[in-house]
Length: 103
Length: 407
Ligand SMILES: Cc1cc2nc3c(=O)[nH]c(=O)nc-3n(C[C@H](O)[C@H](O)[C@H](O)COP(=O)(O)OP(=O)(O)OC[C@H]3O[C@@H](n4cnc5c(N)ncnc54)[C@H](O)[C@@H]3O)c2cc1C
Ligand code: FES
Image (cartoon, rainbow over all chains, first blue to last red; front, side, top):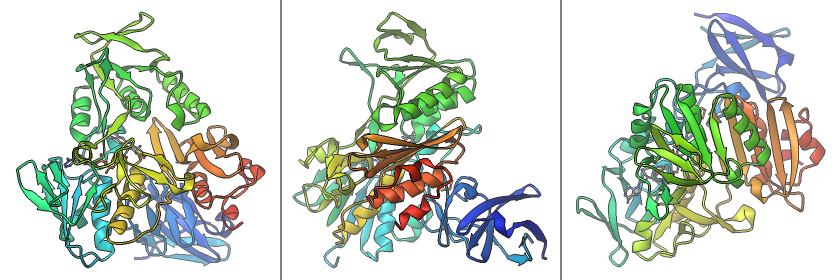
């Protein structure tokens, strides 16, 4: 089942960067690469740290705590110390707004 | 690689595990024996001194589950007692002998015992592994009087954990300030202030003259401190007895080259137990005690074992958590002569350390939460590139350091 939630405005996220979005007791991370947007769970799978404080390089988000890396398009964990993948969510833009489907 | 049939790794810490998995990632299909000197499954050490409210538990090293699937023979609760270089074999506690074509020592380090007047002080507990941590936190009760000797990372993290458990905590440091040369003075001072806010009692620049059997600690100036528990966190020593016994070269750790090869071409050493020449710092020999370095060195040594000749170049990196504070250090601040400060907000600062030629050689940051992480990571990449960044760009928190990477 789809459940599209308005998360933020396009301009809220600088290019090749990430912001945190909290909704209904959960926390998400929303990424921008040029005119594409992606969304994942907001917390690292190693120690539940907010990923939005981490560094984005190309399609990789790096956890701010111990540098665990994920591909934010697929959620795939890319080696020690993270081995559990991140959950990802579909996104869409409508006008100026970004929506994510939290299912 | 073709002549290699058997690789033995001594120690299943961060370094040994990472080495074993890297061998498989790189396509080595021969035998791997991983000798794990402890009875519990391989676990992460950093959480031991940063326990949450639920206390101490085993956090398995990432990838440990893969070890089982990758046809790696793990010898649990077995220590290597001897290395015989002439017949290339190791002997285990149970008497079993295992032959090797290549051997990796990933034996880590152990805490230095507290000595006073040439005698080891038994009343002072040490802290390194799971059993030390479990025993320590099991007896730590609110209103106990804890005396910590040594104002390094372990001592300070344990002071924070103790205060969070309402334990009366006193910390004694013999040097003039906390955290030594590894951390710039300005950040060490902020960390000290945070501990004082939490009612940690400090005696800095004070040596200990005696400790009684009933745990009364007497300082050089006559101050007496009554304690229920004493813990010494006064640094660590590389585990190199095996290397010494079999005659490998030792130099502040098991001495290796920039590929982690010891003085015996069939034997490698990596992680906390070795000293190596660092290519980023003019081949200066150093020994690191860092979680990430242990992984990176294990991986590098594994590739060298199967024939790669690359020089290790990874930027040293370390973090510490105390209360809500995070400290992260990339590179070697002590190699710098100039400091440029970047204030992200009034509680989050980064110091960039530049050498005489203006090359970035270190960056150290302190913040609540992980505010500094992004810039420290970018600084790390700039250090790796041996950049000479513009001071104004470094100092301006609005300037995105990412743009310096392509400069
Ligand atoms: C309490 C604590 C907190 C830490 N916190 C941080 C932190 O916040 N940030 C950070 O960057 N680093 C931290 N570190 C440092 C980091 O954990 C170490 O640098 C890292 O664990 C080193 O990995 P290693 O594999 O080289 O050695 P170790 O992890 O020590 O593993 C070595 C293993 O070898 C085994 N062994 C030794 N001799 C033998 C033998 N003869 N036969 C068989 N087995 C043997 C040992 O039992 C041990 O299991 C901390 C360390 C400790 C102890
Ligand atoms: S919390 Fe993310 S890598 Fe450890």
